[in-house]
Length: 63
Image (tube, rainbow, N blue to C red):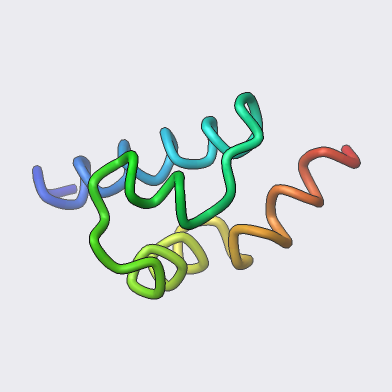
């Protein structure tokens, strides 16, 4: 894993934590971890976790 990929992974994990622990919405979480584009964040998030932010968080809250 390259340093850039590692940084991206950390940012996405932190955004996921913010959405779960602090009930942040996806846009707010994206901006808080350094993304400038919510759509770019959503795309990266979906690639990493296999689902868009809203669906992933809903699934995690049910589990």
